[in-house]
Image (tube, rainbow, N blue to C red; front, side):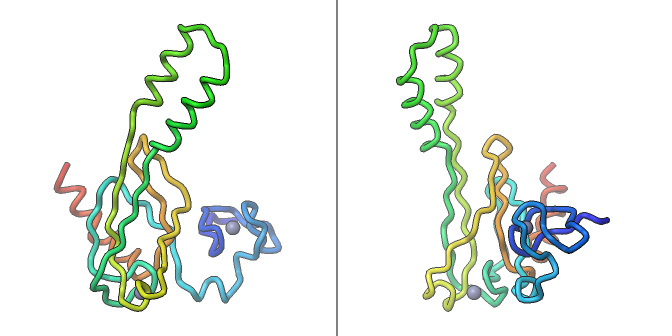
Length: 157
Ligand SMILES: [Zn+2]
Ligand SMILES: [Zn+2]
């Protein structure tokens, strides 16, 4: 059994013998889903991309901004804490954690058609501590981003 990327939920999974994804319970061999050619791309920090549409892989002339931040989360942590009476010693570390606002902004290239259809990038998950966003993108965009991204990161370090 090998680990594959599920074409529905884009998690890396070991499918059941029947081809069922353990994460979303859909068939990983579904040809309609596979033919869409969408892949999971892990973006680290504020990466720049070639002008290829993230959604369909065609030449892109515009960009769409994607913002991910923990500001909303910190507000809700603050609210939750106010609802409890906790010893001060425990309260302060929690507030310190909530104060650390992290904000990641990405510009994703998009073609005119997808822009008109108001296609929004699908964020599968993110980890703000690691400045990592996991996005569902077209396989051409994925190929360009991974082939260009790697040497740049090597040079920067
Ligand atoms: Zn799945
Ligand atoms: Zn497009």
